[in-house]
Length: 363
Ligand code: BMA
Image 1: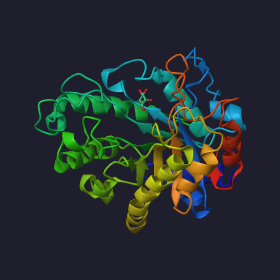
Image 2: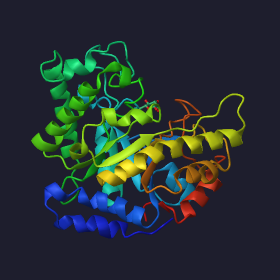
Image 3: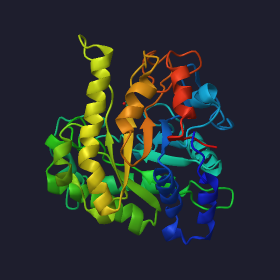
Image 4: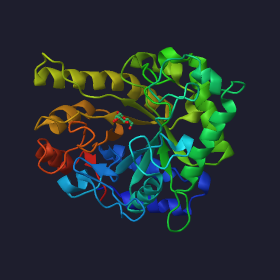
């Protein structure tokens, strides 16, 4: 684990005006890159793990974490998902209570960490979920002049209210990374490539940004995460440099039924390199941070995936952070986890990954 002046960097933000506040997170990420390291992040890290879940959301002190249990440190970044907030639900689509999300996000931030939010929101036109791709009219329907525009702006106001409620003990709203409309070069979400035009996608982003950043004054770093699928087309669905701070990619490891482990590792590394070969120069040219915004190997049934697949995939690129997806409770799915827990097959290798001077965890 590389020690960067993480807390100090965040503390510097105290003197900033609200508009400049995400500078603190930006500096922490930039410092890591300059030190040749990247922050490690884990989705829903404090909310549940493979063998546990927060049972009393109103009183739980958000100290439990599979990552902490394995290596003795929290991830530097904790990811959360806002899906469900748009309907005023008590918990998100994966059962994370929003009051607990608020408290644990603030707690993580006060410990010196960074929080990032994605949003697997419902389909506003059909009433289905984020994966309901039955209509190509959804984005058009929520843009200005569309039949669902007013309703959608109401949904956005729930997001704004929540983000503005993330106040630390001094009453300051904590800066976050906001990562909406992700994996849009794929076609499995209703805002994906085959589901809306390039103009509609870009207008959706700008409308979201105008409302949250300008109208509601939310200070966030905005991360755009195309999927590795059709990554070469990513610039067509990119709203413009003014609206983006981090350029990343969502790229997961997978192994074909007849594929050897070695071939699967090589194919993953090559795929991540292929994405970064396109994104890294573009990010540098535009003055943006680069990230592996979602990745992971489901169930991690290997004792060297972290050091032999993930690290070589990132090596050589100025990646500021990497986030692995959630450790769903075994009762939901015993194999749907992307970070180890004590005794898990990849745990020792994860400790090597943690000990490397290329990675940054919470000090
Ligand atoms: C997916 C899976 C789902 C989950 C969704 C949003 O990748 O983990 O189980 O509902 O992300 O978090």
